[in-house]
Length: 198
Image (cartoon, rainbow, N blue to C red):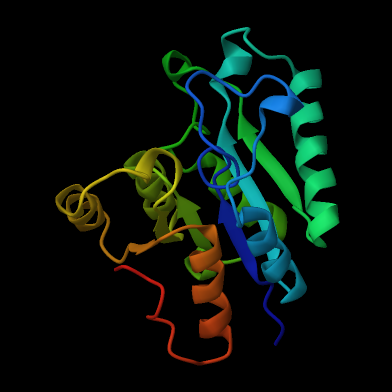
């Protein structure tokens, strides 16, 4: 029986360089080196790539929906050049004070993705660059993966092991390219430990 191959990615710090504050315009969205090519590899291998991102700047009035849509249109234009695509972008527009069910570390966004695609989230890997998002992946029942870019770029070994210990089963990868390589090698039943840090 065919099973949809679905992977969930965070956005800021994983696909694009993390910046303090918020990405408010397309020119502020700068891809992490190798990230777009990694998405293209997954797309060509039959994976549906979906983004789940907290965007509290909307709730704070720092960015409006037109700007969010322009940023994501820019992302897709850059991806088209690489031969890749993002299937969908799910985002939480709320502030932490709103107490919503969709803002990570709560699992609402991922649960909605699972419903939309009709998949068992236990079969869905999710890439994060923070402990908060690893916890969100775990809470949703996804397979948790940490990429060491963005907010996780400069953590030491002790902090890395402490983070992974809080989310049993979590693996670490140098970047999105290494994460994609892990998934593709596993798809083909080859040794998938190479390129993974945990």
